[in-house]
View 1 (tube, rainbow, N blue to C red):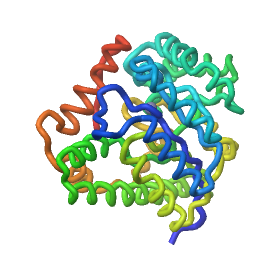
View 2: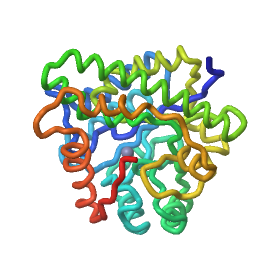
View 3: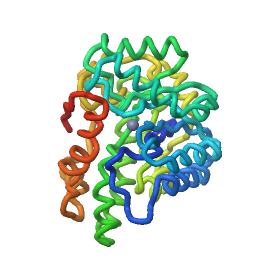
View 4: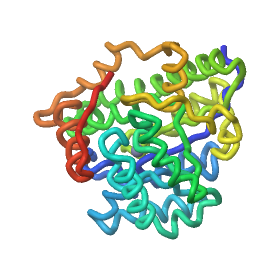
Length: 318
Ligand SMILES: [Zn+2]
């Protein structure tokens, strides 16, 4: 049905945020190895990974993920240390946090052919003034912002997938794996359509997936499904040659990516995965203490990030 869709794959969080539940027997190095294998099987080379660095300071062994990633021929970009979204802290504090992350990534960052940065959650901050402080830093250091123009809320599967595996609930594991792939395809097609409408031409999309256990298990299936739907994989550099990815749409408060900000500025609503389908994922295979939003995404992950970064936790899921 679709015309050609050019997609640059990017991977955030080679180690997930502290507080993310990992199924028994799995680990960040194992996940990253599986991601590398899936990329290799699809002939996708030189992928930029954007790891925030706080988790690397908790367990020195986790630094191995950077070597696994770069030795497979992929590259590292900068993505802050604490992963606090810009609206939570000042522009100056955000720049300090970028520097902290860059110091830890060190040689791995320096080896990348081009210096890229990705905003935590690709959130722009509430104002041009706040974002401008960060943009000034990036420009002064010849670092290019690598935005996100297609995502599918893949982090939402982290808690349910953990619960389903912990509960040995095979039916839910299957449902989560299938819905993960179908949501990725649905959103990619929706983003390609709306971008074509917005720009009047096909633009290369910059696609995000996180280094999660389910990504490790399912990235290969997602990439195969993309290919079956007319996707051609391109490098991040090629995607960044398109002005839609280099230009900056107006800053917008809230949990939005680069494409969302163009749509907001133009009053366009994208098609969304039905709310009931998202809820079915969030609620799959219950386990005491691991409810998706209140226990895991807010109490275990986001609120501690705000505390570490001395930021104001302000969050809306809509
Ligand atoms: Zn991130």
